[in-house]
Image (cartoon, rainbow, N blue to C red; front, side, top):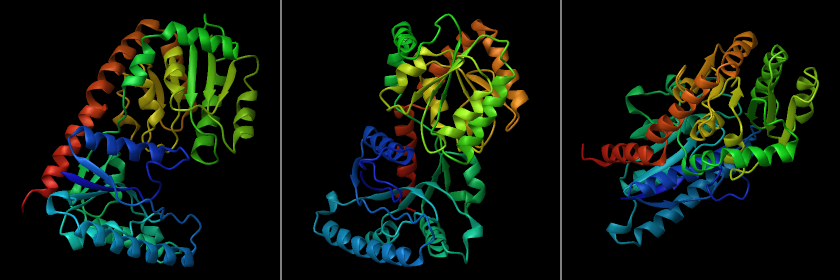
Length: 378
């Protein structure tokens, strides 16, 4: 079927990379793999990050005008070339959908949402307009696709929720894993690392808030492991860089190497070269880096917060430590550093689990089933 797609936060072809842009593109790719014709219906970015009431009113008005224009275009097509369903990705009070609900109502087609959240505390505040629009959109939705089971708790109608596991295209990561020795030698040469020691990896942007809290917790945990051989490579950059480097300064020596911000293409070789991904995941929704690492055959140690347990199988593909506890995290890392055979078993399991449950093929089948249910006659 033909599916209209819209990402109000950031369109999948936006020039600035981000997790939102990437997931929007992956959703479109999975829908196409399932045999659907996917059309990007709008590139309007509806996000207002400051609570500017005038900007929100302008965006609402612009969205309504773009919706009317889109309807006029669609109505000139033959019935066979019109969308049979609409999917909006990432809906919340700062980035409401001012287009999809009205278009779907006019065309009498199902409206679906992937990854939505509701914050009741925004009612009556500076984002009240977006909050109410999000509630209205969810009320109209035939299905709300949730990547993180924890999100379901804040959504108004649990009967409309359809689970979808976080996913990616595993091929680049699996391919890199077959050339581990080459990638390890290249990284050793680039960063001056000792290939005889176990290598830990941390991959995350350096920004204030939960990311910085995760880096600081990681530094505290690794500071307790100074008697154990390891080196850490950090891939990431951002406005909190100075605070991150200050957190690791207490460890001393040549234990930590900074690779800077890396492109998606550069990450698979990094994962393949390392022995263990370590990330405390403070208030993490689920953590794409954790999934990427496992797709590369890299076991992980992560904090058990948010939806992390949905993508890391404890004692199978990695270890989950109690959220926010540096001592527990250090103990988990110590246990895997001292057991190479266990790491290898986890690496093999991670490759298998990601390929079977978190790849594009599995996602395409699940999305196809959700769409079929939504468009089926009542």
